[in-house]
Image (cartoon, rainbow, N blue to C red):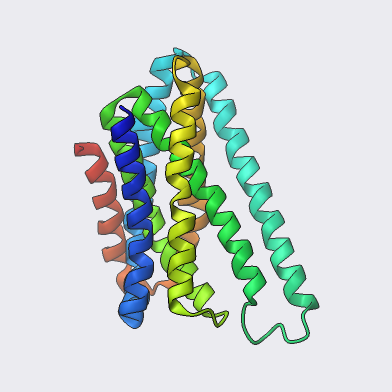
Length: 247
């Protein structure tokens, strides 16, 4: 099991950098397709949460009520954290002498810290899923990869906007992505023999995936994509759901 956890958390790290590499290579094309990748990611995340993770968690615990509470707490916690980071970011921008020019480098490092925490949680979720079953582990890993690619495109664009050199942006983001493996390894050695606790971790995973899909990704599609592409977005979202369903 440990080898699978390492392999798939490494894949999550590698593929999370792929979006950024495409941005460095084909910037205009990558920005153009990023919203379509987001639609696919939404379908994958929601399908993994509702079709894989939640049923597995309920089966392990044999009750839904405490799991529902953990999902709710996860969503509220993520909302509070995001609002706090948003306030910090905008407060700093408003107190800068020239806030309108571009994002400053210290804010890019703040973004990296947030990404590292996010990647650590992804690693924990991947490990917890593999403790339940191999197919669930693969499904959660696909969910992580699906939402990391468009996220990294955005992160690379923000960091390049600070004036950082491309090589530095690539190295820093790759190091941040490797925190996924650290989270997976720590979770592996912490969760051994605690099957009921794994159910709660899976509930947290469902909460994270639902929140990211509905709060972070779908609003991007609504605000950045033209209505003439609605059918494409629907088909890609459905494709993400279908992939997990048939997997």
